[in-house]
Image (tube, rainbow, N blue to C red):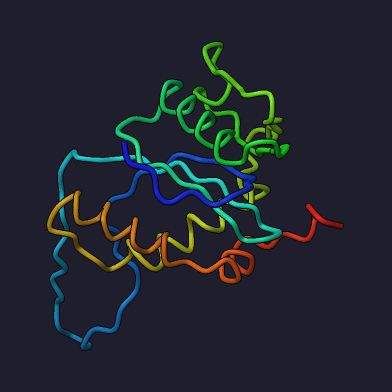
Length: 172
């Protein structure tokens, strides 16, 4: 597992994996267009939390999506933010509610109602990431995709993350 440079404070959390995805494009009428795709079973997971109020984020690349990796993410988040109180919005995925989940004292979990991912500001980040890194792109290796994601996330500005993840219902 590799941690990105950690920034303070956070909110929503999720673990995701991605594969090449075709978006939209312009093609000459009447010409059948071939689109290369990368197939395979390799994957990795990205755990991220973003504070939509100030745009700060924390992310972890992990080989699995499970309670053990979630515990590592929560522990690192708590250490990074030291004495601050953290409210973490999560869905009801099994690894978010597992009996083995060790929630540090500084973290309060707020679980979303079932089937309501749109209420989690980090979902806007996932869509932004997919639109800018995944769609219409082919990576020669899973390592190149992971490196590209890492550079992309490190280069994101707090102002951009505030815009992408802004949700008025959290701060009114």
